[in-house]
Amino acid sequence: MYRVYWSGLALVGSLTAGGPALGVGIPQTPQTSQATDSPRSTQSPPTSGEFDRARRLLQQGKSDDAIGALHQLESTHPGMKGLSHELGAAYYKKGDYVSAIAFLKKAQVENPADSEAVQLLGLSYYLAGRPVEAIPELEKVQTWYASANVDASYILGICYIQTKDYPNARKAFAKMFDVPAESAASYLFTARMLLRQDFGPVAEEYAHKAVELDPKLPLAHQLLGELYLYQSKIPEASAQLEQELAINPGNPVAYYKLADAYSRIQKFDEAEKLLQRSIWLDSTSTGPYILMGKVLAKKGETELAVRTLQRALAMDPNNPIPHHLLGQAYRDLGRAEDAERELKIAAQLEERQSTKP
Image 1 (tube, rainbow, N blue to C red):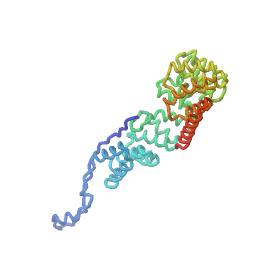
Image 2: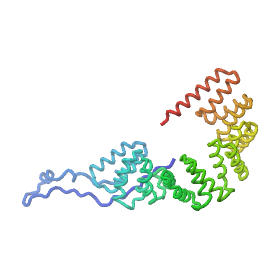
Image 3: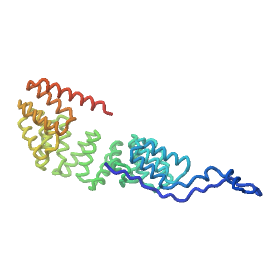
Image 4: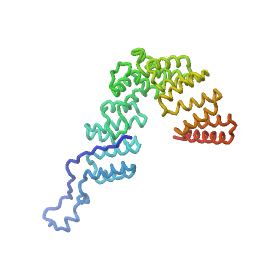
């Protein structure tokens, strides 16, 4: 998690206290002066410590208290320098992006050089579901500020994708990864981002362009293989994943994805060999263990399937899939009580996942 940092702004000048003008010739006794001075004269000018208190509250997760303290400053010291910035940043931290936008726009007017406010304004527009308005602000400042908790260059690229400006999205990701905008790598990075945003057809187009520019680019054929696998185009997926392994025979994900393709056409022996290679190369991923358990069960090696699925659950106990597969395996072994337990756990986990916001 990124460390949150709120930039301090020096306070320039002070608020002077002044009461109404006294009439000529009226003697100013201490009692008279006290009676005629405005209440504002008793208030001390604000200091940076006032902001420090709000920032500490934010760091403690007390967003409402921090915002309340800042609004108290707003009521006692209207026009206080830097206050709009602090309120905008506090509302951003809270997740109230509509309110953040209002104060960050004021901060930008008050200090056009406040780059952090400009960036937070762009991010607030994006997080409020307004990518069109986010783009101009994020284009102004692409330096990353820790208070944003995200990389603005990445969000800018996503905004371009959401507005279907794919060439500018590619340029944004190329800059983010420090590669030429017209390179095979930039097309591959953009294809991966497009796929994550569910822009499958455009992702496929960009992945093909990456392969066209560099047929031996690592992970490009794998991405195409994953796309075809999702579309259940098994021959096409297998061909791409085999090409990926020819380029990079040490890629555990490619072995796993190719095994998935083979298992779908019931090539279980081939799938088992590929999964074993994937596990040899990376024993920390649960996916190959889960698929291995499923393949072994299909081959009738149920006891071995149980041990494999138990290993998967030791790594990820809250995953409903291995619980469900283990329940089926226990049922095949005649272990009804164990089967009922695992299937019940799987159903509970699935229900819990479906009710998450």
